[in-house]
Image (cartoon, rainbow, N blue to C red; front, side, top):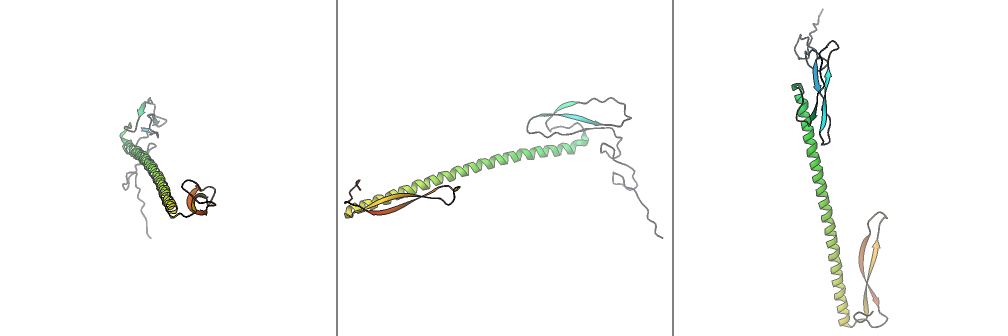
Length: 184
């Protein structure tokens, strides 16, 4: 018959160890500790209050202390990891804010540049069209042709929500009388 021997492992990860975690989370501790709980901040200084965990049989008087808490200190060495984690979170949070502000600035700059490009393109198209129309009018006057160049603006819109797009079209029309410069 096989017999299995059960070996105990304590909180210190040693075989045959009887160490247990106390109420404060200390391996082999005596249930008397002071822990500090960091509070989340949004950039302003807040106060941090010590939380005391103790046995009912403990009759020592302990005083709650209140100190300014900015993430740069905690009151016990046991919470060193907690302090580092808190500082990393605050550091990461600060960098995220800076990155989001930088992204917003870049987006605004890109939008502004796009708007400027669109305005420049519109102005350039209008200038080109005016030059073409002027050339055509000059040619027609020189040739003595009786055609009048008319320019019409049409609005094209796919949906009501879409922006209105304008397209210039050149239309030719017959004059009822001979056209001259400035008189249709």
